[in-house]
Length: 171
Image (cartoon, helix red, strand yellow):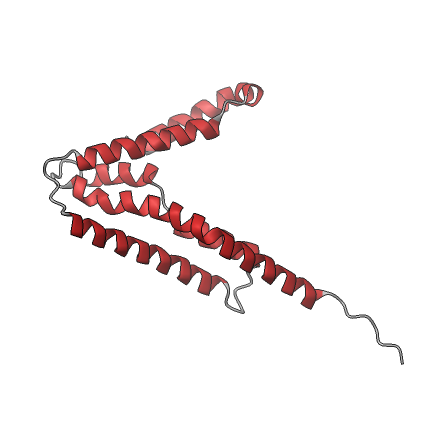
């Protein structure tokens, strides 16, 4: 009811108002960002206002470090697998793989947690890693963008140099 029904209704309604939406061009990017912020805000409020959450500061710090290392591990693994010699991926493909395969969102994760663990008194505690994972992926992604971009540009230049036909040698 929380995830699938709105998706189905949206797809049905889209068929009838598609032309109107293309003419009016509503700011879907802004709307999407506002909805995401609302979901994050309400989840944080629900999680940390819950009196049943028994999470001390040390445990929270440990969870943050674990999440950061898990995220870094996922990024490294996807980089290593997508840059193998026989992978067939271009440097641009590798960048897309790194950022798309390791990034998950609260917009689907939190409703799924609420569905799977409905009525569970420690739901707030279970949602803490997801609440940390989402900002961690944004932070790590923004920190890694310059490094990954320079790697991609240098790899693309190297590939262009190896693919250029060599001028015939005159004897």
